[in-house]
Length: 75
Picture 1: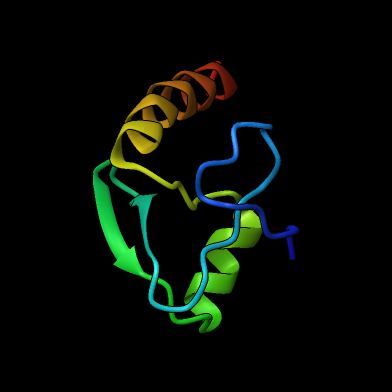
Picture 2: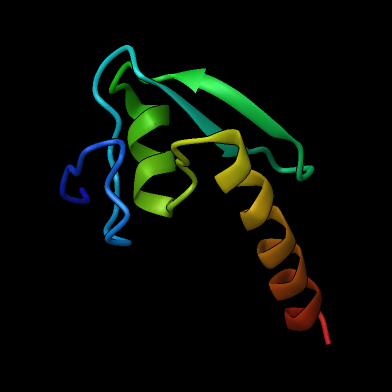
């Protein structure tokens, strides 16, 4: 599991929410959703996959990159 870093850390290192923290994800259809971190299996899988964002803005920026990458892989 990625190392923990503070919410305001801008060092680019992976961030893992603490229990009850709100975080943002990109769902399979590309829509941004928020979720509360319970450290359950779903939360741990999202964290390991890199689908955990501190802010809605971070998740929105990532959607564009993920979509571009997926479209490139289809070629």
